Length: 300
Image 1: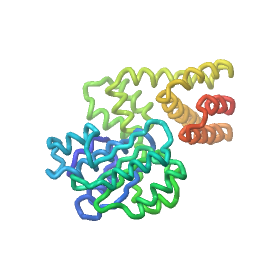
Image 2: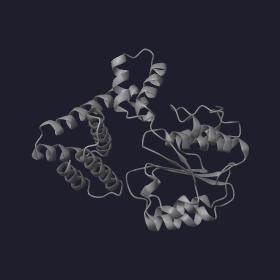
Image 3: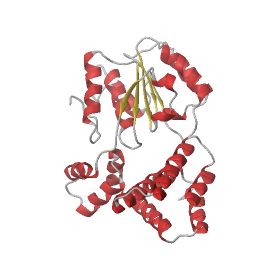
Image 4: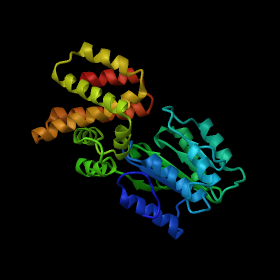
């Protein structure tokens, strides 16, 4: 490929994006969809850099430097802060996009578009329908089912997926040849096919230690922990949003692994996966975190 996207895998998706950029078939709105931690936000930011840099994404000019730091005047970045996106915020963003541009494009990067409520989404839809000249929307979502159909019909969806454990391990071995096999095996397992997560765990030992702790905690849940112990654990977990995401991801992995080990889809495990997915969707909607997790503990 022409550009260094700094992520593992997704060659087909990246080739299509490069083709759009090079052929003049650029869509005015892209939605990068797929599981969290697979590289969607990295790709979105790289796309902005390619479009705004007048020196073929040189990484050295003011535009490239400013986009990397998140302070480019014509590239508006709306990061996922865990809060829902209100209509007042959308109006302020759209007002900024309407200002006279100084760069080749006006670009809006929105992480986790599913956080946008119905009222905010309807306001945002008007801009998608009639965008200002040379304006590009690049958005990401972990769950395309939570996006309004009217918005989906006006964007070009690029689907990113998790990769196989074997493929991920092979790539990590080539990127980190000095690391021991046990660490590579563990990271490949715990990353659950999420390439961005794998790189993060390889480069942050403290995060890997936290992942391992939660992994063992969850195994204990299924082995012998009482409801009282589960609730006590959840109460502590609910205070840290990052741990909650990790908990849900690893819990999903453990249940799926149990199904693979038994080589059958038991009704109990299918129900557990359904309840975990339901809880994950509720947490995205900012429902009471502790209540959602306690309810989940009662049902699995």
